[in-house]
Image 1 (cartoon, rainbow, N blue to C red):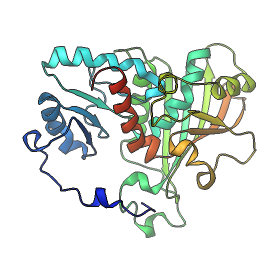
Image 2: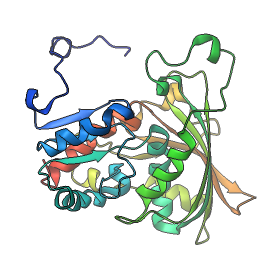
Image 3: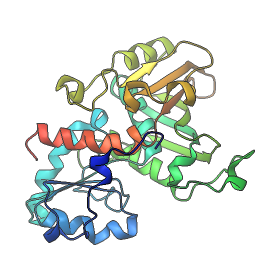
Length: 294
C-alpha cells in the first residue's frame, strides 16, 4: 500500500482460522486456494457469510461467482447452496482479477447484442502476483508471456458470470495473459464478434449508459459509473485511469471496428487489487446484505 496503515487496522489481533475463535458475521478470505479448501467451508457451515478471493470454490455449481454489476441475480444460488449443503451460512466468491475487468466490460455488449466470439489479450500488473510480486530481474525491461492457470480461469469464469443462474454462457472465448512492468492496473485488448450486428458507436453508447443493481441500490462501494468510456486515442492508461471510481470502475477506450470478426475491438483497464480483488469482495458483501443474506 502507498498509504500508511490505519492504527485501528494495525492493532487488530491475528486469530486462528477457526470458526469457534472468530467473533464476526462476515468473513473475507484471501487464503491460497489449497488452504481455502476446507477452511472457507468450515466457516460457512458454522453460519458465517464467507466472501472469498480464492479460486477454490469459484466453479462449484451452487457457489455464486459474483461480479455484482454483471450477475447480481446469481446471489439466488445461496438459497440452493444452503438447501443442498444443509448450512445456515453462505459462500460467495469474487472473480479472478482479469476476469473481473473483462466480464464487466462485456456485460452491456452481451445484454444488447449477444456474444459469439471473444478474444482477449491481457497486460497484467505485477501486484497481481501478490506481495512482493515478481522478482525485479524477471520483470524490469521485460514482458512475461505466461501466468499459471490465468488463461483457463478467465475463460471459464467469464462464461459462468455472463451465463444464466446455474448455466454458463455459450460464446467462445480465448485468452492470452502476460505480466508487464506496471505496479497496479490490468490492461486488456478485447476483440468481440456479436450475435446481432453492432457498431463501435452503439457499443460506446451501451457501455457509457450501463448501470446495474449496485448503482440502483446505491451500495456504498459501487461506483457511480461502472464503465467509463474515454474518447482519447491513447487512453486508458494505468497511471492515469486505474483509480477511476475509487478503483471500482472499468475504463474503456479505443472502441473501433474489428475487420477480422466484423465486430468491435477495444481496450479495457481495471484496478486489479480493487475491482479485481478487495473492492469487489466488499461490494459482494454489501450486495448480500441488501438481499437479506447477511
